[in-house]
Image 1 (tube, rainbow, N blue to C red):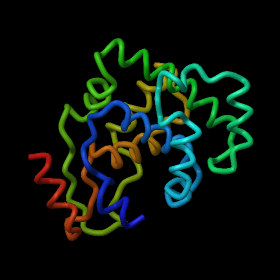
Image 2 (image 1 turned 135 degrees about the vertical axis):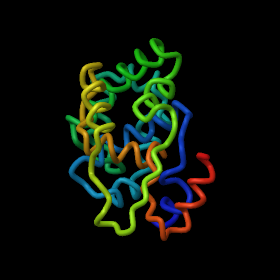
Image 3 (image 1 turned 30 degrees about the vertical axis):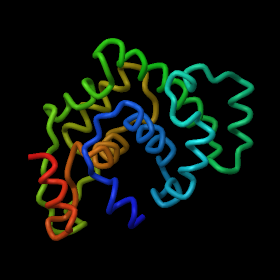
Length: 178
């Protein structure tokens, strides 16, 4: 968790492959702790073709059966099916917008929101932006994209800087975005 916080969480992402990886991980995180997901991250990477959206969009019943028996991931059929469905929807967005990055960052006007939280109890679980993102993703066929999951995605992908102002990463991330 510390390494993830110190090196990844909140860093603005603009790479479609990495954005899709975070979408997959956030899908599986629903109802679980992030620590569980991070422990299984390598398993997810292997099971889901290194997060290759084109390959995942073609997963068939045989592959779904393999995933349901893979102890290295969360074996939840609804989340597995959602990931495949999301890959198909992701590809459609890439085609429509010239990249998922172009689409997803529009929810924050293409620049990170810099918050100024003093305590962890100040951190929200959703926002107007995550509400809008959730609604639009659902309209485009995505599953497991409630506002809370979208907000967690926004935090991970650096669309919002939710490091506490007292955290050393707050200033580092802020410098990356200004």
